[in-house]
Length: 190
Image (cartoon, rainbow, N blue to C red):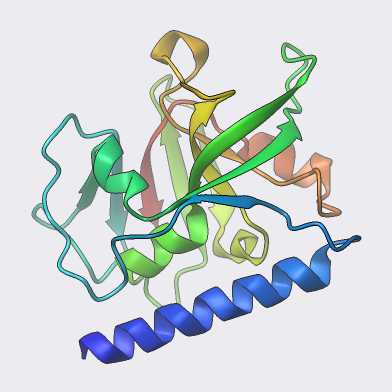
């Protein structure tokens, strides 16, 4: 069974690389790999040792604490860390920022979300909520853990944010800007 999960993981990785290369307007990659994934789909998922910063619930097959899949920063980043520079659509941020974080696709693959799941209901610490379609994984959407090389403080809308790769793909801002959720702490897979 573990080999089947690894095969599925490799197929998803190959598909994402194909989509990235086909969707790009130049030969330049959409992101840089900073840290290769250590935790793979099918692996035993340990409980976090530090403060829980992200919880997945709902239509997931894999859990590590009751019926939830919970992460501290170290466990989350064991899914692999990528980096890209992108302009935040928020009017408060005038310059482009370099973000490091985890591909949403890797998170969903580890959780083994149900085939009929269509969205992740994202919840932030300020009670802002937004539904993010599962289909956004066609792009390298990131749960960012660092901005410009530094951890993102709670007071600077961290520690986690969902960001979109506007710099490399033709992504409709009217639709996707509201999904740039800051201070996200829960993803309910529906």
